[in-house]
Length: 176
Image 1 (cartoon, rainbow, N blue to C red):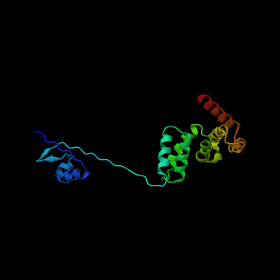
Image 2 (cartoon, rainbow, N blue to C red; image 1 turned 90 degrees about the vertical axis):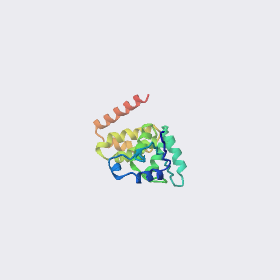
Image 3 (cartoon, rainbow, N blue to C red; image 1 turned 120 degrees about the horizontal axis):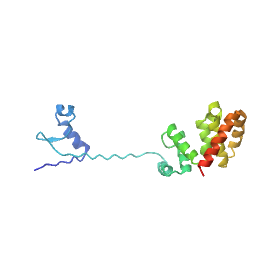
């Protein structure tokens, strides 16, 4: 006759583990035993987490929308991660969401992407990327990017400006 025992709680499993001889545990054999013979066992452990905060439902809904590719939700959630507003502050997660929203064509995200990732476009190596993001924001209807584009054009070399325009043409043709 086969005996079958199911360990229904962590306490039951701990009770069996405490009564397992130390040599058996040291050798990695943690199977429960009855009268020296191994018995079948199963451990079911359910853990639930609850996030406490004022607007947690809002961020759960935003997260679901962001998972489905909604750029507005990605942008709002990114800013929440940057500021640590009602959720833990996480710059890297915010930057990932911001980049996804910018790549989806959200003008505000494109503008902010330049400010965050390209250091306001004042770093010589980032001129081309900054120009591309600002131009995307301008094409998306964000007029705040026009003076930034003019400022960048005055700082860029002709090669950098040519490279930026090629990138813009490439992204425009790939999005069609």
